[in-house]
Image 1 (tube, rainbow, N blue to C red):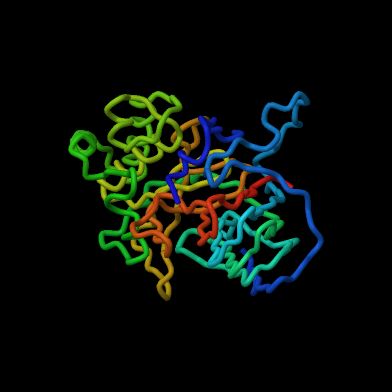
Image 2 (cartoon, rainbow, N blue to C red):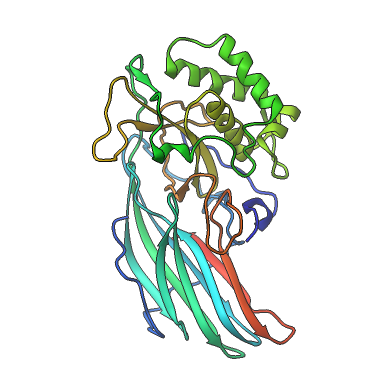
Length: 350
């Protein structure tokens, strides 16, 4: 598995246009009605929005209302050689406070050993095992999912919002360093100290200050993946880089923050709760608030049609030795011959 940006050519990071339980999805050679295949270029979190560049202008979307979309996600494998111990994984949508997900169709074709769902604390994967596939064989596993995404409206009363003095266990994962988020870098710490010396009293306004500084110091430019500190040093970055820098600065200020990945884009969110709020039975007492680091200015709310794919930036995936920034598509096998299987991951609007 590689970093998301290496899995596609130069991409456009589109700014904002302004699960329910899946049950046991297990099959052994089961076949359901096939659906048309569509080639996507791997596991990028920022694939171009389907339909972009169409000659026909799309009708305006009212993002203040819930947005319902259908997606096809899956994998198709054709092999010119026999292979054994095949394993394919791909991320799928899951429920979030602003999103509900349901599976409306399934396709399992070929000699599949097992298909299961795996949760990774902020991401969900389909895991496909293929014990053996002979030369000229093929496998296809696909879900059709319906997502309903609610608009997030920024709060109007923010003076009582703050960060708990003692972070609960669920929030500690969103502090410190993550892959490409080098929060302890000297340049980032120096900027954080500078901001702290002139920070507003309100916790909300402290985050707003960080947000404004990132958008002021970093100009949107596409390019190779950068550490957060590189975006600060060069003054250039795309949505991933600007989001990383915002997250790094928030964490330096003692504010939990994380990345949110959607098709074609990513943005950050930060955690706050009302003063004196108490968690109930281990549940967080506060709320994650989104903002748009790159693109149309949105702070504390998010009007967005595209569904959330995953939230986080330090995932522990069983097939990886070290934490990864993004849960990407993955395939491995033991092949018998010099040729390799052809693997096509699918992520497309239905």
